[in-house]
Every structure is written in structure tokens, then in C-alpha cells.
Amino acid sequence: MKKRCLPACLILRNVGLTLALVAGSVMLGAEIHAAANHGQQQNYALRKLFVYQILVGFEQQQQQQ
Image (cartoon, rainbow, N blue to C red; front, side, top):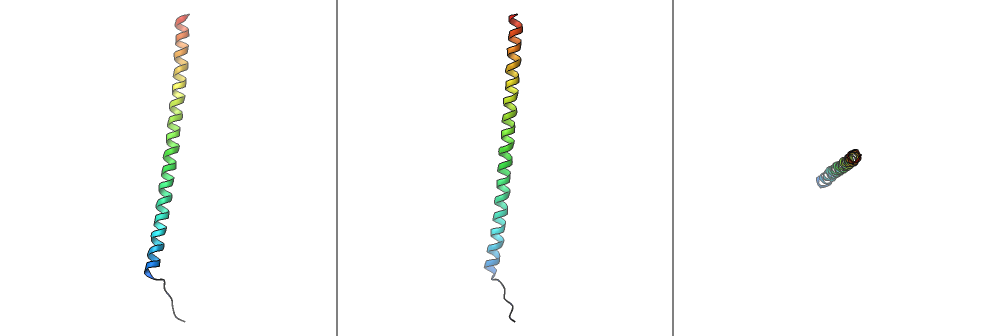
């Protein structure tokens, strides 16, 4: 029985394709993580602003009385 081997170009193409898929998934994961982190920071800033507005309103009411 004769042994058959894949041509080098097919092996290199498959290795390159695998590396490209891994790099793409890593980049996609990094973008998703960055977007989620940005959303949390924005949410935290909005909560902080809301609390600040409540405190300022409370202080203004105290000064008027």
C-alpha cells in the first residue's frame, strides 16, 4: 500500500486558517470584554451623578428651611 501525504501548501493553508480563526476569536473576545467594561463604567458614572443630584437637592432643601 502506498502512503499518501498532504501537499505542503494544504498543510500551510490549514495552519494559517487555524491561526487566523484563533486570532479572530481572541480579538472578538477582547472587544466584547472592552465593551462590557465600558458599559459598567458608564453605568457607575450615571449612578454617581444620580446620588450627587439627590444630595445637592437635599442640601438646597435644608438651606431653604
